[in-house]
Image (cartoon, rainbow, N blue to C red; front, side, top):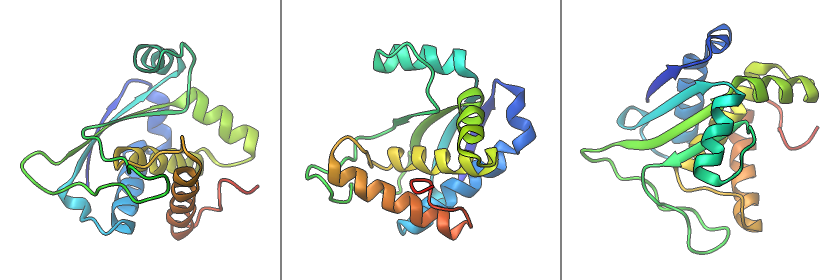
Length: 164
């Protein structure tokens, strides 16, 4: 997997974000039967101010959030709970863009009593699944996405983030 990481907030360096991004995206693609080395993701490592501006620009919500994703292609399943269409390798293998905020990630990790590394891996798996067409707006889609996150993270030695 190629993750092109732009670090705007230097605090991300302390958690080796680029390594975590490679680990999370590789694990996610591998679980879905996709060859990680074929695909690319762009990652913006930022702070709450930057992600709040992006959240307002793209979602009309002027507040910080933990992670945002912009898929390169629409792959979502038409039927609630079905698997999205997988990406096809080709000349443009860009899956899309992810932005992650250090401030919100660190706050959420501390509040949940988790390491920032584990929470970051969760958010990066979550963001990668969004790039692959998974969503959590409809009930069965959310169940599918959460089950995949839990399975992928479990294989990485991280406890189920939805059961504390």
